[in-house]
Length: 224
Length: 249
Image 1 (cartoon, rainbow over the protein chains, first blue to last red):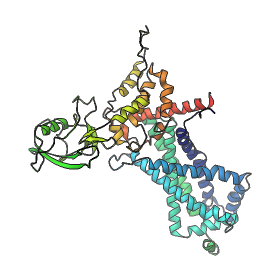
Image 2: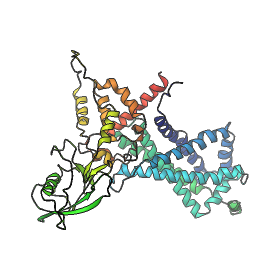
Image 3: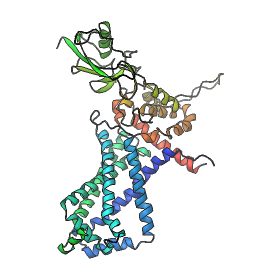
Image 4: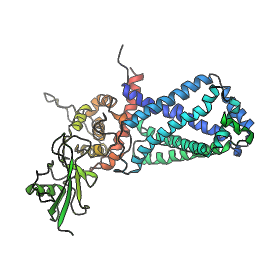
């Protein structure tokens, strides 16, 4: 057998970088978008949101396969390999307090928070459906019940913030590591552009976070 | 202006010994730089307590910020001791050896790993032969020449390595300076012939993908070499090399 065309270390780093954009980054944007539709601003009721979002996605062919191959496995690989990358560095922002050096730290901390958050979020939602504790039709009520706890709402706010910051800055990094933005001017413009994208995603996140309103008789789902 | 210069040096007697701080007070003289101050200390190595001690070991050569040998951490920032004037420095002046290279003694460090990295990325032009090849050096545009000249001023001092969060004794990363040199020789009309070899060296462990883009290197460089430009351009070159390696063979 001949040697692999690309060094394993290089290939793993590139894969880690690529998976962060597609499918993970693309899925995060889509996920925030679909959940922002739960906000009254969009005029969807709980039943309409369930029809528009849950049933439509659930009705897609090969959805379980896509959930594993395009969401679960990429996030696990990106998260675990990302932690390994974190351990390889020795952050020094107190000695060299430049903006980009702080973002180096922020990227790692935000990534770790996002990873832990995603695990808790998947446990509260998809895993509960798998275990048969909640049906997909009850997901709206489930989220409303979760958000009835201020601590949970704060945790979701932190998790969404961390994920979005990690994605926006990650896209800036992709511009450099794949060789698109190769000079200070283009990198500065990219910083502004991705920051704007980040703010837009945070707006969607805020709509989602404040959108799921529980009628009181559904709050019992939190206890199940 | 005070009539003494107060100095705090992080000393280490042997490569495997524990470091310790020692204070000194030297008579004020105008236009001292850190190297001339250490030379004055060497003439009369007495610490602030009045004890005669072994002279502080340091390295210095050119005295005009082109050789890089006197690089150390002065008041918390990595720079060349020869071009750092005492006037304007906050006292006591703290001197520490660089933290990313093994300490030999006091302020003297072993920068061998950086030179090994230059060998790894083939930071040279393969032109020397056993006979005259009767071919003139290729022409190069003034713009390219200017850009290359910028990178050719690298003195392997280690400031960029010191400031880099990804470069430390436990990491495999070759660091910013050798990346800049790899780009320089890839952009040289004769050096281009080995570009693929350099890129493959950079696509291994410790290569270009280990850069964390904290961009401290470009700020720490005393020669203001555009290291982050080189790193991003090498990102582009290695991306296209990867596509070539996968799809064109």
